[in-house]
Amino acid sequence: MKKHILVIPGDGIGQEVTQWGKAALAQIAKNFGHEFTFDEALMGHAAIEVTGNPLPDETLEKARKSDAILFGAIGHAMYDNDPSLKVRPEQGLLKIRKELGLYANLRPILLFDELLEASSIKAHILQGTDILFFRELTGDVYFGEKNRSEDRNTASDLMIYHKYEVERIAHKAYQAAQQRSKRLCSVDKANVLESSRLWRETVQEIAKQYPDVETEHMFIDNAAMQLIKNPKKFDVVLTANLFGDILTDEASQIAGSMGMLASASVGDGVGFYEPIHGSAHDIAGKNLANPLASILSAALMLEISFGLPEEAKTLVNAVDKALKDGYRTGDIADNNTDAAKVLGTQEMGEKVLSLIK
Ligand code: IPM
Ligand code: MN
Image 1 (cartoon, helix red, strand yellow):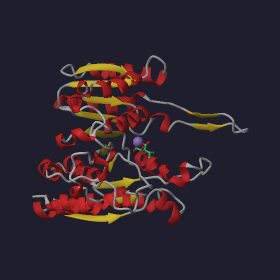
Image 2 (image 1 turned 90 degrees about the vertical axis):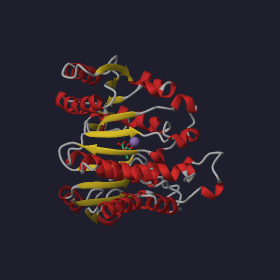
Image 3 (image 1 turned 135 degrees about the vertical axis):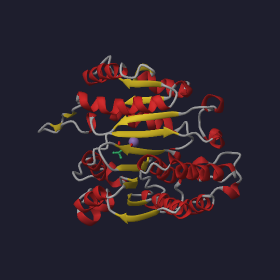
Image 4 (image 1 turned 135 degrees about the horizontal axis):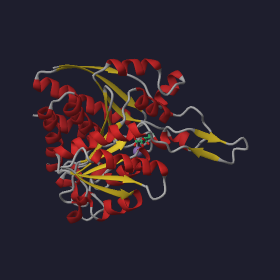
C-alpha cells in the first residue's frame, strides 16, 4: 500500500514525540511491505515564529494533499501568561480542524493492565474499563462568536450547535457502538443549556435508527463524577466539544497518564492523528516526554485511515510488550518500577521500535 503522511510536530514535546510516531510508521511499512512517504509542516508557535501565522497556507495545502496527518502538540507558556496576545498557537489547530472538516474526535481510553498501578484510581475499579469517546470537534463554544465590550470588562463566547452537526457525529458514535458493546452514553447539560437541549433531542431522534444500541443521557457534572466512581459503566461516550475536552483529560487518568492517550480526528476527508496531551514546555527538550501516545496515534492512523488493523495491532502489541517488560517513562513509573527501566523519550522510542515484529 502506498500512502503519503504529513507530519506536523507543532510545539514543545510535540517535536520529540512525533519523531517516534513517524519512526513506528516507517518500521511498519518496512515490515509489511508498504510504501509510506513523509513530509513535514509547521503549525502553532513554531509556525508563528517563522511566518507570523499559526497555520501557514503551505501547511494547509500539504495537509489536503496527504493521506493522513500525524500531529504532535500545540501551545507555549508565553501565550498562557499573556491573554492579550492576538495571534495564538491554538488558532492553528482549531483552524485546521475546521478547514479539514474534522468534526469527530475519537479518544479511546486504552488501558494497559501493566499500568493499573500508575493511575491514582484503585486498580479494581479500573480493571476492564474500555471507553471510546466521540468528542464533537468543529462546533460549540470553541467556534461560536466571541465578543469583548469596548471597556473590556465584559466578554462572551457563544455556545452554538446546529442540528446537522449533532446528527453527523451521533451517527458515527452509534455505528461504533454497534461494533462494540451496544451501549452509548450521550453527555450534555440539557437541564440548563438550550444548545444541550438541541443536542439531546437530536440524539434521541438518531437513537431510533439504532434500536440495537442502548442509549443513556447524562449531565456533564454527573458524568465527570461517574467516570471516576465507576468507569466500567461507560462504553461509547458521545459529547460536545468543550465537555469532551474536559472529560477526556479526566479520563486519561484511568489510563495512567496523559502521555498514553492517542486520538483520531475524522470527518469529511483526510484523518488527523494526535496524542491528547499538550506541548508540556516544562519538560520539552529534556528527553522526558512519553512517546507512546504518538506511537498509539500512529496505530489509530493505520487502522482508521488506511484500513490496516493487523499493522495497527502490531504497534499496540509492541507498546504492550515494552510495558510488560517493565519499561516506563517517568510519567507512568510507580513504586514497583525498576529504576534502571525508567527510560527517556529516545530510549522508549527505540525500545518500542525494536519490539515491532
Ligand atoms: C485538545 C487541546 C486543544 C483543545 C487545545 C490545544 C486548543 O486541549 O486537543 O484537547 O482544547 O481542543
Ligand atoms: Mn484538551
